[in-house]
Length: 360
Image (cartoon, rainbow, N blue to C red):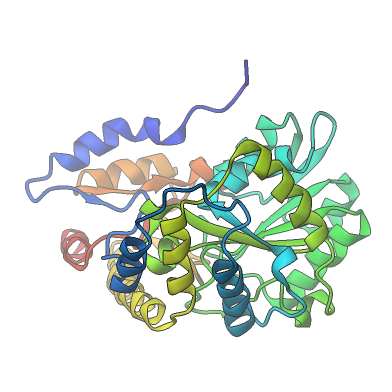
């Protein structure tokens, strides 16, 4: 039997019941699930491709592959990327959870993850039987001798944005030991106090994609979490064997979803509109938290505020639940987060305003 950690969200059941008992209802800021409408252009593309009697392509349609390349070149300054380096995925979590296994890693292989991290990095390594090492220093990571290194910017949970020098250091360290550097860039469109940079940018990778894999999702940027639309791109020598594994496993995106993805990746206007929504919610929620004594750390990007009252994060979860507000305890993301809570911006304007009123 696999030995996996308890599913963390189960431990919030009591706090959720308490928050839900508030006379004005719960304000659920615990999970980063989109609440705003899916853009009409995605819905139209999806319905227009609804006649799909045959099997879809694991590699994606040529239109989707070109849309991915166009987006990465236009938005993230990717250079030297071609279709051999593009891979559609069934959302991003599926790839995160299975990447070590799909790379052929196993017992004795080390996977480096951030000290504060999305739990699925750890789960994916465990599923493959790998050894997990939490590390935030590229030089120390190289000494571990990993086969796979995960970085995340803007980061979940704390919203820290890695600068160009940071990325250069991580790329150099991974290449020095022959590790795959997987960069989770799913929150890349949401940089507030710092501009995110992709590992595909020649300014940080030296004009080479060797050893690099950037992971993207349309869930947050385009409000299509229910579509399970994601992709990875980078070094063709990494992507090709992943594609072969995925062909055997039948890991394929439905044709209508591929059509919707191509339409969304070609359009920037809906992303800018969504950025404005989240920024407005951030501008309401952050001062409300700070006004009642929370300190907001990092949070330069992503869709969360990383907040602390200077006490155990579970106590802060309870304090907020008494006010009808549900948040995630920082210990979900590693021991270093035990005195923080993660507060999501992914609630409607009305619910964000309700939270601010309760805090006031």
